[in-house]
Each structure stands twice: as structure tokens, then as C-alpha cells.
Image (cartoon, rainbow, N blue to C red; front, side, top):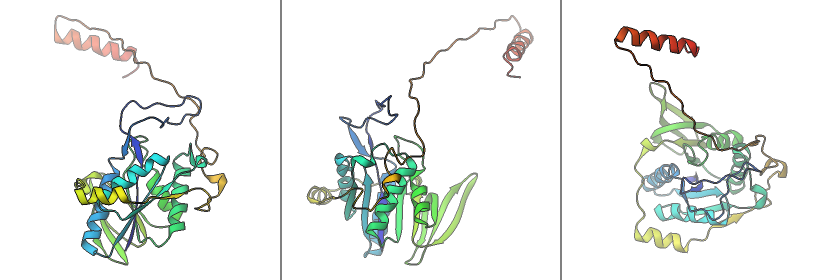
Length: 263
């Protein structure tokens, strides 16, 4: 079974800087790490490999050359190889353009039975890229998956979180699964894993390599744009209502809420 895991390198600090002209994140000279929520997808892929024995795990990410470190982190945990989509033409991509680029790479490599990803990235918090990749590939998408109940070479049955409980869903392969953190507990890489990652050769793909439509990648291919960036100003003003008895206090509060048209 061929498994693809989509990951992302994200800022490891809360001091995120935004380019006010382009509305995109400034990633240069910023400490980065493998997106914490993608760790659960990586771990689940490795667990599948341990059960099936013949599984092969490929990691794919899009980003600057430094994002290869995130791929090596995944390899140190048990993934087999990785592809880095890096090209200046990919820069500034929104979630749709990012998903298009990733799906184009998956199609180019080909042969995957299962695509795994985390619920969302901690720097964007949209949760849109994973499902969009599956949609653009034309394969079933299972989101908020908390358990893979059964996996064969033909289908996958999962337990996914819904409002008020869970549901069991079964779809044919190939399929894309977006997992939540309840699915497992990610392991810490051991020494042999770290040595494997250190010597791993990450393959680079640019826009030409994946035969991407140039009109659908990067900032130019993004249907959504950040038109304005500003830092919110926190201003708080309050009014203290004092009264000698509870009834008067309640009446004063009621009049105040009515004056603000809250009730």
C-alpha cells in the first residue's frame, strides 16, 4: 500500500509577522517546525505501515528550501521518503492554490492508495487544504477522523467526529483522510530514525516538474486575497453599577442593557 502524508512547516513562535503590502506571512529568518497537528497524520501512517508491513510512506510539503527539515522530521519517525514543492512561483498561494499544487504533485508521483493529513495548520487555522486536495483529485474525503477502524486494499472504514457524537463511514480507496489529535499519541523519534533522516535525500519539485497550470499556482492563481492587514487595538471601557439592594441593582442592570440595545 502506498501512503501519502501531507505536512507543513509552520512558525514555531507566536511572533508571526505579516507583510502588510501582500498580506502574506513573512517566513524568512523565523524558527520553524513540523506542524504539530500533522504529527498525528504521520504517526497514523507509521502505525499502518507497522501493521501491513508492505506499506510505503511518502511525505509531501510545499514551502521554501528550509521546509525539507519538516520532511526529515517525518522520516525520522518512520516515513520512507519525501518531496518538497519549492518554487518562487508557488509563493503567496491561498488554500485553493496550495491544494491545487499539492494535488498536482500527488498525481505526478501517482499510485497512492491513501492520503493522510492533519486537521489544520497552526499558522492558518483554516482546515481547508486537506479536503480541497481530495476534492481536486476527485477522491472521497473523510474529515475529523478519530479512528481508522478497518483498512484493506479496497476500502477504509473510519470513525469520525460529528456534532453530538461519532459516525462510522466506509469509502473505497483511494481516499483522503484528515485526522484529529484524538486518533493517537505521536511517538518521539529514536536514534536509528534520526540517523535515517540525516542521510535522507529529499526530492525537489518545481512548477515545471509537476506540470502545473501556471495560472493556478501562487499569488496569481489564488482566488482569495488579503486586501488589508492591521493590528487590532484593544480598548475596554466599563461602567460600574452600584446599588444598596438587589432589586435596585437588577433594575439598573436591565436599564443599562436596554440602553445598549442588548435586550
